[in-house]
Length: 180
Image (cartoon, rainbow, N blue to C red; front, side, top):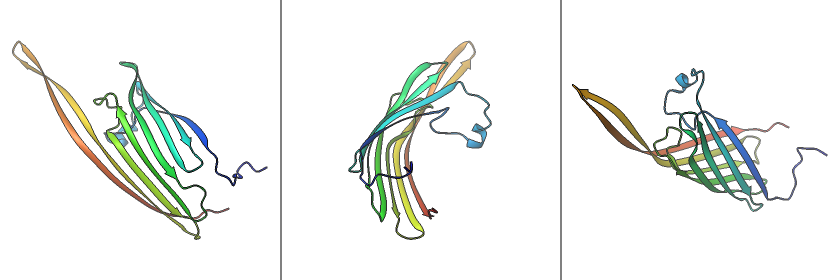
């Protein structure tokens, strides 16, 4: 029996995954971030997805922050709903919507994205297989900066805040060929 052989009938199944890293996203210079030797923070991202044989799927996830300074806590949750075209000889198609529930909006370890839409399509019948994908994300990022001000014997703490509304659009075009 070939382990890579696929079943001709679609089946329903559950996928459980966990990823581990030191950031969800980077707001700084990525080249500079790679030179950081160590970090005191780890982010665990467990998730579970149910794929129905019709092509519909639903997923839930969380971002668990293990910070030695502030203890173990959840910074955000996510819920996704999507559709993947079941076995089709001509096309691959998928669409996913994800909503993020932020528990700590001022955390540098929470994503600024609140809503994410992603779709992709691929034509499989030709020797070169063209594909296209589109993504659209919206959200906001809130930042609070604390400033110390000293005038003589008086010390004041000043807080400055800003909110940035975010809208991202992405497009990917690709051409591929599968060699057997």
